[in-house]
Image 1: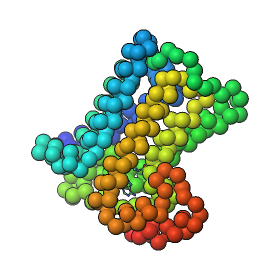
Image 2: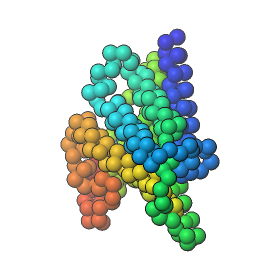
Image 3: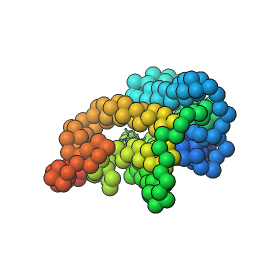
Image 4: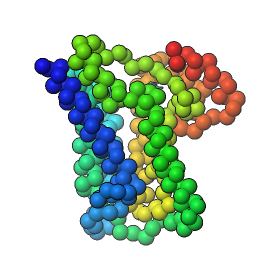
Length: 257
Ligand SMILES: C[S@@+](CC[C@H](N)C(=O)[O-])C[C@H]1O[C@@H](n2cnc3c(N)ncnc32)[C@H](O)[C@@H]1O
C-alpha cells in the first residue's frame, strides 16, 4: 500500500513537472500563457525589480540547496529515499508556480529589438532548439531518474533503484553540461529583449554558473578520477578544439561503460 501511494505520488510529481516546464517555456518566451515574463499586473519599477530578484533568489536557493548530498542525507530522516527525488521535483514546481504567479513585468525601455524577420526567425529557432537540447539531454542521462519516476517504480516492484551511473553519450562528449547549454541558448535567443526578460535571463544564467560549480563538486565526489579526467578533456559549456576532443575519446569510452 505504501509502495503504491509512493508510486502515485511520484507519478503526480512527474506530471506536475511536465506541466510546469511547459508553462516555464511559455513564461520565458511570452508565448501561449496568460502571465509571462512581460505580461501581468505591473507595479512601480523598484517594486518590480525587487520582487523579481527575490523570486530568482528563491529558486536558486531551493534548487541548489535541495540538490546537495548533505541536504539529502539530513532530510532522509523524514523523507524516504524512494520519494526523495519526487519531493525535490514537487518543491521545484511549487517555487516555479510561485514565480509565475508573483513575477512583476518591468516597465522600462526595450533593451534590444530585432526588426529583421530572418534574424528574428533564427532566434526563435534557437529558442526552440535550446529547449530541445535540454529535453534530449535529460534522456541521455536518465530522464525518469532525474524526475523521480524510476525510483518510485522500483519501489513498487520491490527493487532498489539502480545507482546513478556516470554517462557521457552524444552531447556529453562535447560539453559537460549540455542541458544547461540548452537553457542558456533559450534564455538569450529572443528577438525582443525587454528589461524584465533581461533580468530573468541574467538571473537564471547566474544560477546556472554558480550551480554548476556545486554540481561538479558532487560529481567529483561521486565518480572520482573518471570525472576528473572528463573535466580535463571536455569543456564545461563550450566545446573545446579538435585536438582536445581527440584526446577526450578514451575518457568518453571509460564514461560509457
Ligand atoms: C539537471 S541534471 C543536469 C545535468 C548536467 N549538468 C547538464 O547540464 O547536462 C543534474 C543531475 O545530473 C547529474 N549528472 C550531471 N552530469 C552527469 C554525467 N556525466 N553522468 C551522470 N550524471 C550526471 C548530476 O549528478 C545531477 O544529479
